Length: 246
Image 1: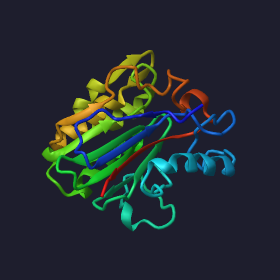
Image 2: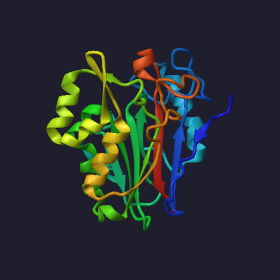
Image 3: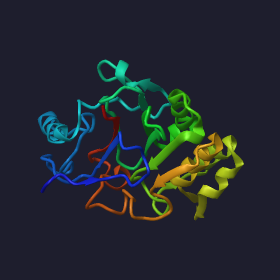
Image 4: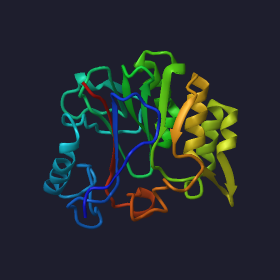
C-alpha cells in the first residue's frame, strides 16, 4: 500500500508546507500496521526507521522529533539537538520541519499569514488544559490575528469519554469550557476541537480550519486511516508536519 497523506485544506501562504500522515503505507506489522512513525510505542526500531525513510523524500530535512510528555514546553526547532522533552516546536527558518505525533491527541499546525513562522503543537487534554496553545502562540511572536490554525485528526466528541475531574480542570480555567462537554452517564464526552477553538479565539486567533464537530477526522472511529490509543492501546502514531520552504 502506498503512503497516504491528508493535505490540510487551509489558506496558508504558498511557502508554508504541510503533511498529515495516516496509518497507511508503511512496513510496521500489527498492531503497529503500517506507517508507525514513533520509536517509543514498542514497535521494531528497524521498521520505524524504514517508515521515516519512506516519509523523508517528501520533506526538505529530517523532522525535529520530540519526546512528547503532555506538557507545555515549546522549542525553537532550529535549535533542537537530540530528542528533547517538549510538546510543540516553532520555526522561522526555511526547511526546518516541525512535527507532532498523535494517536487520539489533537495535532495543531500554526502559521502566520505572511509565511514567516510555523509551529506544530501536540494538544492532548492535559497539555491543552495547561496552556500549550497559548505557549506556542506566544513563541511565534506575531499578532494572534495574523495566525492561521489547522486542527488535525483526533479522538472525536462522540468517543472521548472523560471523568468529572477532567471537566473540572477545564472549567477552572474558563467556564465557557462547559460548551465542550456533554453528560454521558456518570462521565462526560469531551470535544477537544471546541476547547482548542475556544483557546485560540481567546488569544485572538480567528482563522481556524480543519476538523471540527464532524466525525470525518475521528481517530477512534476510523480504524482504516488512523491509529487510536484509546481504541487499541498498543498502536502506532501519525505525524503532522509543517515547515517553511526556501
